[in-house]
Length: 187
Picture 1 (spheres, rainbow, N blue to C red):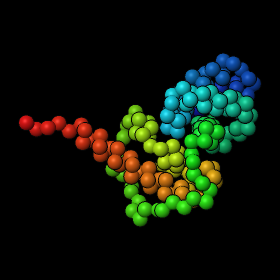
Picture 2 (cartoon, rainbow, N blue to C red; picture 1 turned 45 degrees about the vertical axis):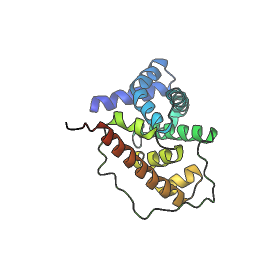
Picture 3 (tube, rainbow, N blue to C red; picture 1 turned 180 degrees about the vertical axis):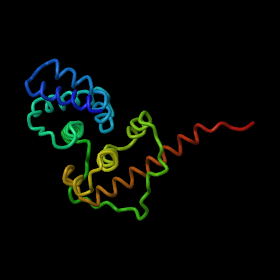
Picture 4 (cartoon, rainbow, N blue to C red; picture 1 turned 90 degrees about the vertical axis):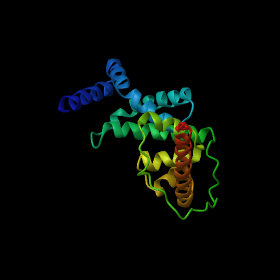
């Protein structure tokens, strides 16, 4: 683990000096993870790739601002999430009024019964409306609080909570329907 940390620190220093080989190595090492993160927000692979490329541009442009406190990967992920949210806003995919009142269902569903492999998550999330998907990603995957999500998306805290509950409910329906389709009749 120590040698990996040293390797990453060397790449960061090289990127700060605008060394192309260091930038390429950093890209090669993190592109799969960061593309997966972008895909959780953006359905179309080509659009997610474009967002990831923009995110890497910002990473390389701002790498001198990374001061070593906290995880470098976490810092990059935050940039990618912000890029994905900017792309969603620019495309006007989230159509939620600032004053819109969303009913908050009484029952909150936990995710303890959701045991999914990483390869199963993106196709499931792709079936959600953009608002549900975005709030679900920010709350469950990125661990933001509803206040932060509301501020990031320009929505109310109650809208964030409602979108999360509805996303969980819809995911549960999708998973249950998938299980029913996979059952084979006993003859």
